[in-house]
Image 1 (tube, rainbow, N blue to C red):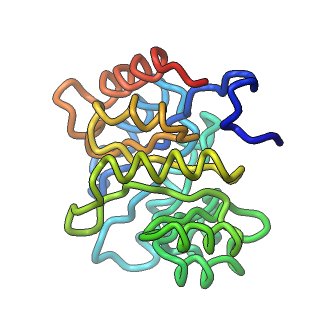
Image 2 (image 1 turned 90 degrees about the horizontal axis):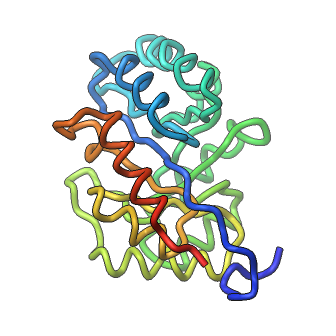
Length: 218
């Protein structure tokens, strides 16, 4: 594959949507069904409810899986690669190099292993070398903090220029969708800005799709 940064190349397709669920499971299946009907969603990252036992978590994954997978989207579990494998998910999203390294034996070769929590360029390259199927930039930490948005778009643009492994850019608001797409993200992660939208998740996703459709991606 030639470098994506060359202007002589054909225009890249617009990024696809990577949907991050809320941690509260109440009504989630119905919300996901509406969302998957409203937009072309490549993957759904399922955040498991906290303070629940392993069997409850597995049952939650199994209950959500058909809603996602029957629409052709990949179901990824946030952490817990062993539960992802046991419950029939398509893979897991892991936070940091250590978690990625620990989860690869469980996930590979049949399932997807994604990685975030990559504070430096070196960390991102280590994740790729270890076998991550994608890297994510811009996700908030548990306290809701993340780097400045300019730094996030710079990291996405660097990755898109140099590497073939896909990159996910995390948008905390719909206003960030277009800049992340223009920077070269292969996927745009959308979470609370969709599920907390007063218009409903389906309407918020339709808005995100409109923003992607007007993005010029050379």
